[in-house]
Length: 545
RNA sequence: GCGCCCGUAGCUCAGUUGGACAGAGCACAGGCCUCCGGAGCCUGGGGUCGAAGGUUCGAAUCCUUCCGGGCGUACCA
Image 1 (tube, chains in turn yellow, purple):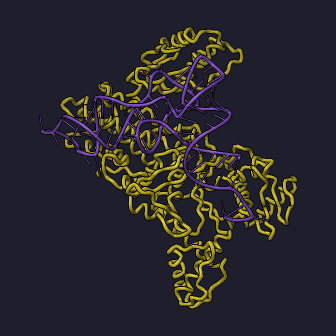
Image 2 (tube, chains in turn yellow, purple):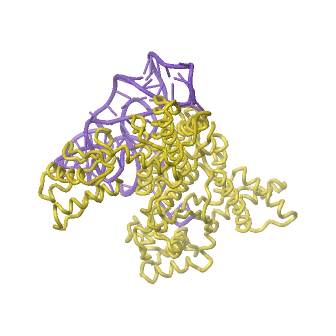
Image 3 (cartoon, chains in turn cyan, green):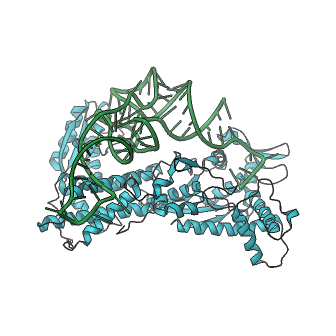
């Protein structure tokens, strides 16, 4: 009997007992209790529904429990405990069958259909093409990529997108900076001044040199053209960096594409038509304060240019037009004000408030030797994603970025991340997998076969492992509910720990062939879940370390 | 001022859409390799869940206020 069928039987029984009466089924029906003695699953329905059913929690719980003792297979016993909890103890057989499924197709274990094919677009990183990616982008890349993978696994049509801001003033500033660098290289020092707020990083020198190589002897174009050319190069570098970080995007969407059909104009026109825009001080304002913003916002500046929010609104409308049911934006903490503007704008333009979900990914504090490592992309100093990966490796970096909830600032301990030792959680998990693979490689190991008899798996360490395996789909479901991949790292650490304990106390390969076969199968199942879990967070699961 | 995020063990953090005596790692103290990988395991001490009210059968979790910390608050993107 599965979670779902228990859920169903509770609902049916409840309906029978309390009859219609317009009673709505309580929300939380089943959970995995913290304490082992409370069973494998527990339910609080008796307490939440007691008043509505006109019974005491105990009386209701007893009646519900009775429904199970008669008809449920897979459920070993149902107890009423505490203030009225229903505790379900599942039979070992339930877990044995589950394990057989896992081993049969480990890549499909944890698949779900709660998405129902809904189309979700995840936009993340979306860094300006004006410099190398920094570590906040790296964190967003880890989070976004994992979300897409998990959402797909749970039945969503999830896609990833990188929005390239190649149209703004920052790009022209990059162009001016590159020109200054080129002038500097070629000895025209009197015009080799990087403008106020420009880009000082060494990569700009590389860009200048690249320009010269590509255009020998040519005059320098204006800032904007130089900027666009340079930005293209920077963007390619970002894509390459992300590829090395094992993050690829379904689409790179350029701001310039938004301009193609004069869509920013259309946005402004529509807001005007709706009477939600007005002129003041020579600029055009949007009545954002009527849609939850703290004040009205400028759409068109007094010198006739669109502010950032206009093409961005057009871009988000485009997401809807392309047929996405929901859009999720992962933004840096400095974009908070902007996200409110976008939400207000989309609401004004008639989109439902649920359409866009903004997740603010909090900052990353790099620490080395106990000291904070400061960074500033615009000044060209600090740690880039490339440098971080070179120092700690992709596996550690991706895992560390998911060790905290994305809404919490993350302290990234570089020393710990590069340490290949027991206190590094990445290796702790990978080690569990490598250990299993090593057992499976053992000369006395064998292929248990599909009809393996698992009934001998009854020891506490074995049951703990089976329960941990059973929690995997549960964990993924939590990721989807919270739009937050962090539970995966917590889960994998726990699964690895449970395995290490099992390994320490129970020998897999022994004289009893039936028991050996069962335990080999258990090992394969655990390794399968570890590998699939690691895949979802972009971390490798090596057979040897 | 306003907005968002965060205050849980000495340190870093879990705590599943409120649930049954608050968990883990690190650090500290002690133990475990004839035997499938010791990158591992076991035992132990440690917490008025920032504070005070409120809602509830039940609160670390929800509401209010306060205290403390971080970030943001542009006719930049």
